[in-house]
Amino acid sequence: MSSFPWLTVLGAVPLVGSAVVALLPKGLAGRAREIALGFALVTLGVAIAAATQFQTSGGSGQFQLVEKHSWIPEFGVSYALGVDGIALVLILMSVVLVPVCLLAAWNDVPETGRRQQGYFALMLVLEMFIIGVFSSTDVFLFYVFFEAMLVPVYFLIGSFGGEQRHYAAVKFLLYSLVGGLVMLVAVIALYLYGPGGSEGFLIERLTGLQIDPTAERLMFLGFFFAFAVKAPMWPVHTWLPDAATEAKPATAVLLVGILDKVGTFGMIRFCLQLFPDASRWATPVIIVLAVISVIYGALLAIGQTDMMRLIAYTSVSHFGFMVLGIFAMTTVGGYGSTLYMVNHGFTTAALFIIAGMLVQRRGSKFIPDYTGWQRITPVIAGVFLLAGMSTLALPGLNSFVSEFLVLVGTFERYKAAAIIATLGIVLAALYILLWYMRTMTGPKPEQYAGTKDMSHRERWVVAPLVIVMLGLGVYPKPVLDVIRPAVNTTLQHVGVTDPPPSIGTTAEGSTK
Image 1 (tube, rainbow, N blue to C red):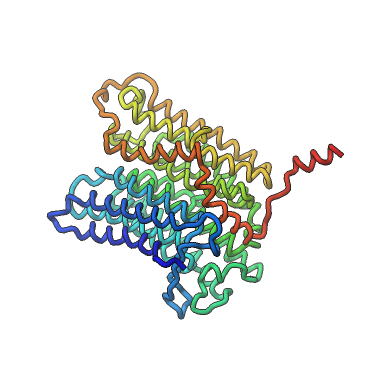
Image 2 (image 1 turned 135 degrees about the vertical axis):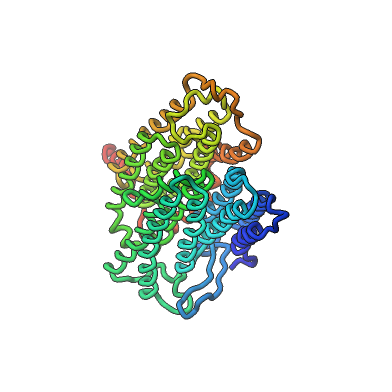
């Protein structure tokens, strides 16, 4: 166990920050934004300090920075936290994106007072739940955080979103609650089949159980359904376009860039690790669903005229790639899928934030209302083009490495699926380049000639995103070194190994 409760402190900082921001006296209400940003930066500092304690090699056990305390012993529930490489990189991604979102949301609620305080307090509460869900090593504790995340997101969309915000918030809540209730049944069943006792929900005690095949498959489906809704995968994705379109851009980043990763993270942590036989049994169907998500999301993105909805459908396609890499069950596919989660978070954040900047200046989310904006906002256009090139996986930018690894890893075991999914790259080029062409090229819109380009605050918002997109595109090794042991351990739990290289076998045979 860790001698210092790094993960508890990491979650406590934004929780305390949310209380401070929400309870500010009237005389200090105008400082809510600065105080919220300060607590988010402190959280980032604590996360970096915790990450320095993580050993990429030679660590004992699956999890590090471990904390474990009895919580509800009669029901076998523990307050148990810990991270492996996958959880660590997702937490680091989250604590970088939260201050970016807070800075991007600076003018979302311009009037000072309780409404502005509530908006920024909800974002900090959400950060605490995000840290908890990625670091929980008790299945029931994970479920608590998994469901609790719905509350701040519901209010962020329903209270601060667009004209259809109530419809979008309720739809998001209903989809998520149905998925969560199905998973709760599976969680209870897992405990009944497990070893029981005061620590009966710990992942380490539930891994490797001998479960009746039918029961294991039903429990797997319960977990997978909840994670597929959260991810989101076709055909349970329909809540996402509405939620992303009606939410503020910063909220959309938190939702699509961070929260939806809980779905793919859960597939790795729980579906594969706790139900290995059922995972192998369900893999052919999931591979088909993942390929459909890749193509379907890209095709619908091409036809969108609403920028926010377009980005949402691109994410349906990208999550298809992530699921494809996970259930290819190869080391290369696993590395690529986990790296994809990180890269997608930063790239999608850049797209949503740039789209938000355009909407703020033009007053419209609809692509046909724009033309020639690179002539009046060249910096915004340049960052938009960079984020777009990352989205379509241009070599040298971050998404290329992860997408390439996913396709190579999938091709090792499912050649047809990998070949079909490659079409998603071609479609990505279409929806990104068409979007850029329709909004940025063409004659200069004279009526908006005096529009200001990116402000200093906005440059601070996009700077970290640009640095990550370029840095991980050129040198992804540090992240891959962290996630490699965790991916290998997960595949060992599933009991699969990489297929032998068929090319080498053929060459050997021809030599003979």
